[in-house]
Length: 320
Image 1 (cartoon, rainbow, N blue to C red):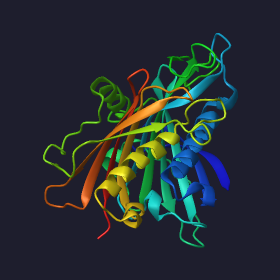
Image 2 (tube, helix red, strand yellow; image 1 turned 180 degrees about the horizontal axis):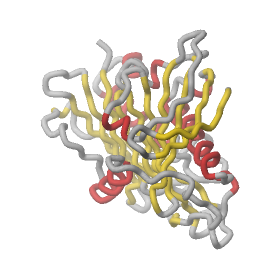
Image 3 (cartoon, rainbow, N blue to C red; image 1 turned 60 degrees about the vertical axis):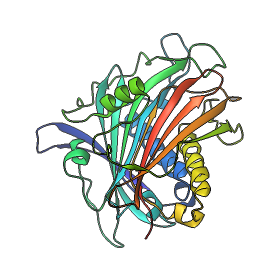
Image 4 (cartoon, helix red, strand yellow; image 1 turned 180 degrees about the vertical axis):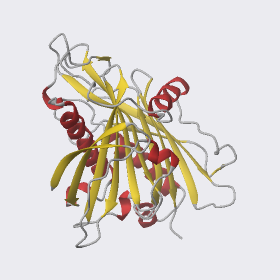
């Protein structure tokens, strides 16, 4: 993998510091969606660390407690030609990453991913965060992350985290979030409403009644190296819930793997202890005139505390 930092003015006048990478897709990055999320999540931590000149892996808050740059919002967006399910071993990728000051020592980070043509030479290119909202490229896959610092209020308890930025962490080197970048607004609204309600889906038709499943936290697979429920594990939790409903509908599991992911949004509101049981509620709808275009909405709750700890929406196209 090659990587470099590039500072360029954006045509709109907002300075942008970009981290550029060129890499090959290895087995640990593709296949299960959680593997892709984990890899791109690492890019976010690396980008923030590089652009802020701060070691995000060994941070502590003002009280000396370990602090973590937690994911509050994770979005994957594609135009369909390049999506997570289309990646395979050995694909060469060009990745441009930009980070912005999101306030309260929080950070908005976006990655633009393009597949490299064999033999092509890529020049690092700064990009504006509004590109995803205003004019996404047809050949690109986008990741958008909103991260905020958290720490445990009491040792060993994951259910009661608090906002805890490290005193030495500074976002002054980052440009502010420009007008039109709404990741924080999406997160705040989802936390208030307990859902990712969006305009344009009011007329979509239910495919089946809401499906309820319960999944214990898998301490062998779902917990990260600091004892928290790993952010990427929520992708597996939500996908297992969808797959259970898919099977109830008598659908082919191979087609489940062949879906084209167009847009995925995940909002995190909290964490869970390692012996928790999680309840997922999945609602599946399809487009009124294009039934192969579906949206799955998932709510994840901690059974013991009845807390909503995450909501997600999957917009995808089923294979023909």
